[in-house]
Image (cartoon, rainbow, N blue to C red; front, side, top):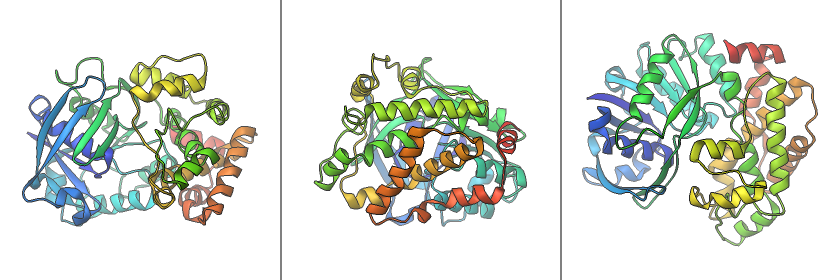
Amino acid sequence: MDKIVIVGGGHVGLTLAVDLRQRRNETEFDPHIVLLRGNDHPFFRRDDSQKISLENIISGEQVTDVFPAGNVHAISEDATELLRECRLVIVTVPDILPLRDQVFEWIKENSNGQQLNLVFVRGGQGGLIPLLARHRSGQVLHHASLVLVEDSFYGTRYISDKVEFKRKKKTNVALAGPNAEKALALLRRAFTGPTVGKDWHHFNVVRALDLQFDPLGYIIHLGVALDEKNLEKTKRGYQYLHYCEGVHAGNAERLRELDKERVALAAQYGAKTRLFTAMLEEQYGLKVRQSFLETMQDTKSIYRSRSAESMADLKTGRVLQEDIPALLTIDWLTEKAEIDLPATRAHTENIIRKIGSLGLDIESFSGYKRQLEKLDLSKADVVRLLMA
């Protein structure tokens, strides 16, 4: 069997590892997982293997599999041989600058200059432009073939040794590098087989320019988690379903307007994207209802994502760490386009004010924006970089 390496042990990484392990006979891939948390990760707190239950919340199918200890690695270990033997590396860590830098350093130390096939999940978040600039400038990734994924391959949660997940019907990807089509073929192989079925995991190739404007976590994550009504729930320690409960009559119209402005900003750059409600229909078959609020209320059948458990959890969690840098990137792109998006401007100002009231410093979220400013690109330069 061919080795496939998954970097990151969060919800997406663990779901992918267990899914591929369970389907190894049909993919002929032997999955290995590299954990950034090392010995603190649950996969290291066992004897020789980890038993995981896997439930597809759409089909209701449940399986249990054992992930072998020999296929679990810490990022601090020497991975030279592992990378030399693998066919594909899938990076599932969030698009958070310190985490991505840790992965880049790991690749540099262990790849020995070989031409890797790299997949970046959430390729179009705040760090897409710096990532492609790094790739094209010869820093670490110059010889790599890249597949940049719009979002996760699944909607998923991992709780107490059980994975609850759903597959996606269609996911946008962008390609970069000398043999990116080969890397994409390997990715498609990982999601092909009778267990998956023909209606799921279709990868649709778009331009990196289009992919830049697909993600909307800066809208649907920040706009829900930092909404006043929802903040009060978090302060009380009450967890709500992020999409079907976190979107309510008080914030639904604002979120819809932000989504429309995201599509309008994309058009300013000549990029193609679509509204969030259209994404839900193409990815999961969820029909668009008459209003944004009604569509979000229908997501209970596909989304089980819950809000932060506490204010401390919110302050240190992925939502702020990943989506505030993405918001600042959108703000930068808006400035470069020299247009005014009133809802987005008000949203940005509100989020900056909110994180200040939480005792957080906007500068700690501004790493990608500083990189963008250092690149000193014009709007035309941005388009050229994302089209090359």
